Length: 281
Ligand SMILES: Nc1nc2c(ncn2[C@@H]2O[C@H](COP(=O)(O)OP(=O)(O)OP(=O)(O)O)[C@@H](O)[C@H]2O)c(=O)[nH]1
Ligand SMILES: [Mg+2]
Image (tube, rainbow, N blue to C red; front, side, top):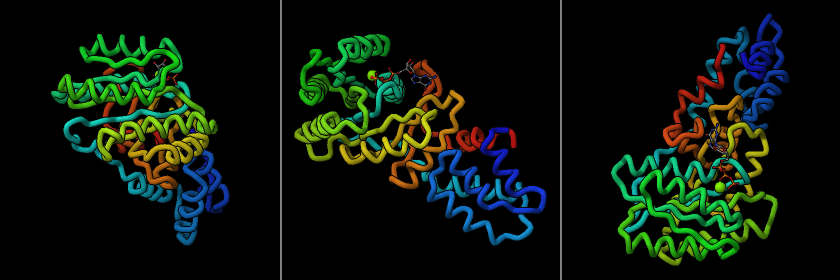
């Protein structure tokens, strides 16, 4: 059983109910202080409750609090999805996986390498593009990523691609100039129509603890985030922060990454998420 769950169980076992211990277990699992406090308030009046009752209610509260969103229907004439996040969370891999998903749905997709920061980033996306049979718009290293994103939409309109997935450079959420650069990418996309980008997804490494919540707060100040890609859920991380982000920023999980291959990806599965959280109980 996972450490946080052991702690949760211990706090309500053996007759003496340790509410502070229960709250600490929830905080330890990155569910966020607000949820932990509210949950303990809710169950502390329940005399005679054991671990089984508390786990059942916790599971239900997390399920209903997650409010998973389905991928939205496509915007016309182009549906634009912007991927953002801190360094190394899996943005480029997720761009390719998401492209693969839309292609399997029968849509034509263009990838846009608006990561002009690293010279290799364009190459990385071009390799994915070749594998997927999808055209890739690449910006020159050091050039304005907003200009690359803008051009990708023009090329998609000309080429008849229905979906454009814009990969961006990894950036620390604490760097104001980099966040301003991201706002500009979104703003310039909006010159093709106020609804663009229809989706802005924050890619969060599920192994990141409470810092993921800080990432979500800062990125949502720069762009209007519509959802999360929870990457690396094949790792040992609990992904509790995904729940905290939903609770505190209102951003729902939409996609899950569970490995490095194209097929290790799909719509966020609440039951699978809960099964991992409560594994061993
Ligand atoms: N295990 C696992 N690895 C993943 C997953 N998604 C991405 N990776 C790996 O994580 C590493 C970084 O992935 P990238 O897609 O390059 O991440 P990025 O966010 O684009 O990185 P930067 O552009 O440098 O910020 C690569 O080795 C990927 O194969 C996942 O869901 N599970
Ligand atoms: Mg990348």
